[in-house]
Length: 76
Image (cartoon, rainbow, N blue to C red; front, side, top):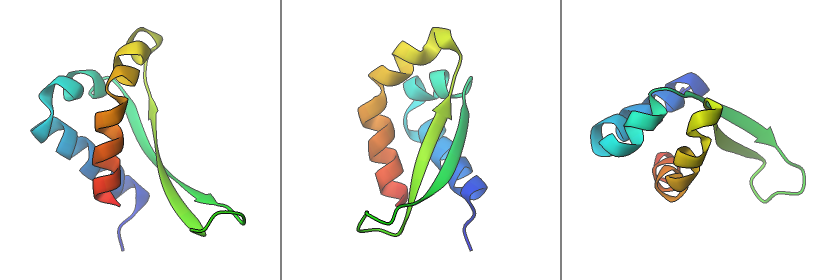
């Protein structure tokens, strides 16, 4: 079974290898995969990637948001 920690490691590994510009930012951040139970959603258990980073990097990480979402969706 793939754990949340394993998914977070896979996410950062893909970013590190395929997107070095984004990796320069993410290496200073903490990436965590969260489970969400939603009774109203079509998917009973959805996974979310949460990125915690220093205040000085937030704007730069948000600028890479589209890329980060694409990688997260690729992981499923």
